[in-house]
Image (cartoon, rainbow, N blue to C red; front, side, top):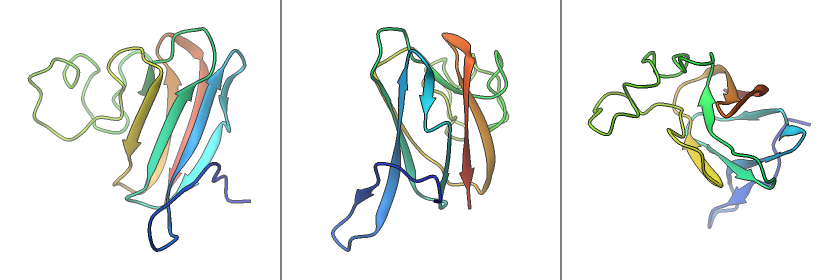
Length: 118
């Protein structure tokens, strides 16, 4: 098992991403492995707020090296952050850099997960 769940297939049949669900018990699956250039779609199946954000809470600097307030300001032009920037029901992010990226729900920081990008 490579941790990929709910993959989307393009016309060639190649998997282009995975889906992570969020509910009262947190993220499921908690860890996924993808290839660089693939997307992860987070779907809120619960009633609580979901705000997907790069570790570490509350700064969110791990993926893009900028503090949360900077890329979420509306006028930011730097590297695309791994941050939903506000609570919502779905969020999709394309990971372009290889590495292991921890994330959390900024609205309930005890819920965490990991995306491994190969």
